[in-house]
Image (cartoon, rainbow, N blue to C red; front, side, top):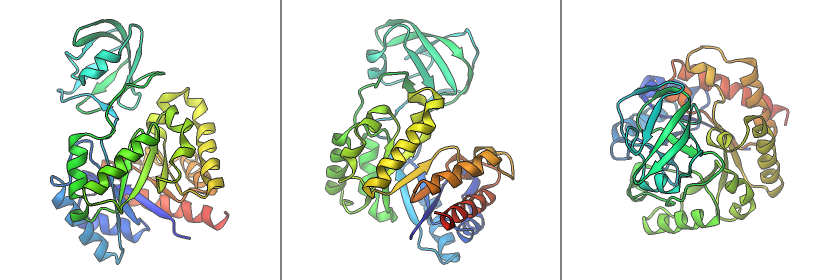
Length: 325
């Protein structure tokens, strides 16, 4: 059975020698996060990616992770938000207009995958005054989510469509659609892919909110893979409920014979440490034992200190689980 090990392209592994070593240790493909860059802008890195794969005699897979309906803040100078501070969404922190339009007083807003928590104090035309409940360093383009509510946003951005038009030219093999809410999102994506000349590429539907969990079975005949994306999915519920939701998605996909991927913080500690925690290794093992057809790391290889070692632990742990599945 084919099992895929994915890393994420980024500055920490954007040289031929490092990427070749990662392929040699079992990596079969990589994700390119297009939240901050376009395929055109990443052309040089993509070329190095293919050169490294040839060095390791691997036919690599390249997944593009779209912007999609995920809400992000705009460009800012890095700022430190301290507990109790007051800050303006739409002012100090630029956000799309529809975010302010959808906010209500006392709404809780999560920034940067939940690291920072704000509470809406007052809302006026074009901006919202927020109190910092949980602070931290904030930089450009970080994610934004309103606790317990969906913010209406388009399935695809103009940049997404431009990237789809270039997908075949850059050898893309799969498209990761973030924050899939219902079947309509995937229908829009598939139709747009057809119009952009890349309709045969695989669709990876990222489950990152409870609407996606609730509509899961609707995706099975249009998505090629389901992605249990635990970062933002964990923001949609009390964190202690996340393992049960992951188990539920795994079981439903397994029973339907639909391939699924598990991603987010698989080896988070290895961003700064050469050896993973026992809990992380157990997490990988259990994800594979539950039937995952692929696993992926993100920041661990994109910006971490030990991208080659990350792939080594990821691959060896997955193989051990596969031998016992």
